Image 1 (spheres, rainbow, N blue to C red):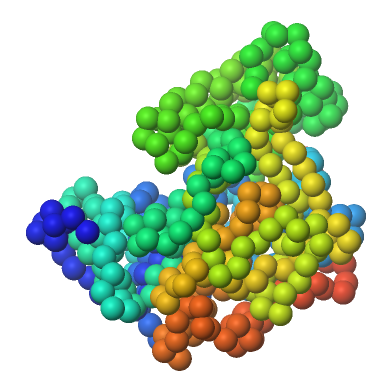
Image 2: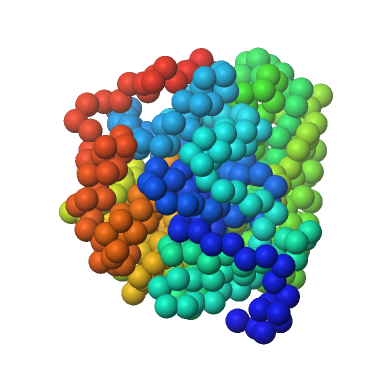
Amino acid sequence: MPDTFSTSLSKSYTTDILVIGSGSAGSVAAIAAASGKYKVTLVERYGFPGGTSTQMLDTFYGFFTPSETPRKIVGGIPDHVVNALNHDGNIFLRPNTYGAGTGVNYNPEKLKQVWDNLLSESGVQTFYHTTLVAVEKADESARAIFFHKGAGFFSITAKRVIDASGDADYCHWAGFEYEKAGEEEPAQSMTTTFRMCNVDLEAFKAAGGKKMLKEKMAEAVDSGRHPLPRKEGSAHEMNQPKCVSTVAVKVTDHDALDVERITAAEKEGRHQAFIFEDFFRVEVPGYQNAKIIGLSHQIGVRETRRVYGEYRLTKEDFMNARHFEDQIFLCGAPIEDHRKSPNGGLETFWQYVPGSGVYGVPYGTIVPKGSKSTWVAGRCFSATHDAHASCRSMAQTMSMGQAAGFAAVQSLENDIGASELDARKLRERLVQEGAVLDIPDVVADITRNGWSNNKTS
């Protein structure tokens, strides 16, 4: 660690379990870790929690398998999050355009408050506007150095650390090995999501709805009338009346970890968003009077660093619908790979889990190789490019956080390292919380817990 940090620290804190990043994975990890007797500290570089769940998206995928006979394969703390949203009527269930399974649509602004409330009720110490800049290891504890624009540099010394930063920032500074997206296979594209208001949804549906939209996009690209980056994209109804959220922009060939390239990507994402606005207003029935009312807080990044763990999830695991004795959650999401096609187009490649349609994810995928005191949760977990493209849905990243939080507690309680932990006991704790670790025998009641299903667009 550079000496300049040591000589300019404004404050020093200590904690038992430090969680870096308050996205869906990190927030759930902190809530799970706070279920024990230990002090838990959560740091976040923005001024609100939620990460992708509040910055750019409005739908949780991965709770249900994508089939005509869906199974609910995620439970526990993720259910508490949805229940809290549903309490005030801030969700509805909707089908996915491309068959990824029933999604839980929510109000992302309300979700910020839900995350705040759940974290506060759990007793988690939270620091916003806090960016990790360095890591210093000392014996079994780690001292992480952070920067806050008001306080300058300060440190947090922790006995256990959960890296939920998305970019594996802690693992990078701590010296754990990882693969950088794009080194072996093309990295997935980035997306600036945008939201439009004053959409006449009835007119849109009467004109053919999503099928019509797909045809209009393809026609616009083929004719050259609108310079759209792709022929397909998602535009779906939001909780807010007459509002639509999109996943349509595609930005490729930029390194999200390079300051110059991510700056260029942010600009390109915004540029594309308003090209789409023109297309919708001119070409799509129901959108003539619609306007963009918001862009994602930052461009959406699907993959950067993926840590090498004690186990690495692979496409073979996906294709064989494999299960493991130490699996800590289930996944039924298809491979959804946003990248360039061989002919240079920017489309999405889909591949579905064969057989049962569900595979298990083992404990070793959230433990950096050789780790004594560190776990990963979220999109920086241990997986190949293809497996990662399936297992990055937010219901799954919340499940990773849930397992990592309970594992950190178990590690402290038994004074054992992350890689030595008894996965059987961890599984018992997960089941006690309500996690689903084995394929349910019955078709899911998608209105379980009273979750609303009052919209279908």
